[in-house]
Length: 169
Image (cartoon, rainbow, N blue to C red; front, side, top):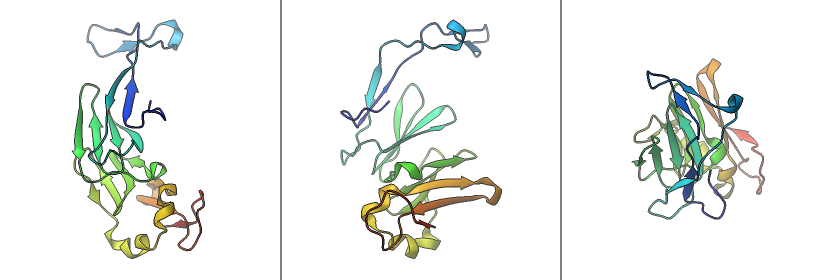
């Protein structure tokens, strides 16, 4: 959970009453699938620029935490900075497929597999450069598995501020 009043803090809790089989791997929950949780724990994710958390995305057993200028990974026990220089500027641009997370950063579209982010939008840089920078946070991303594509929908090049994407890249 990220609350509006603490935009740099992730709050989480541990389930109460979770039991494990002898192998230590299989979990069962009491109350017929109902979950109850103990007190919240939290950790601060502020990057060097002090930017807020712009997105959270599951990646296997880890959680990817985005700020505008950094990408961090939480494995349930510890948080580490995966990329101190590249983050996500459009929360709805985040999408994943086959262990890869795609998102829009300040310089274009990136992909992450839990380490340093790699820019993948160089071939369409002229198109991305024409997008209205004030509306970039409204971009929406989606993975099209049948075509092996990540598509980014952005406000039209000449549109005034609008929350709905008008062009696809």
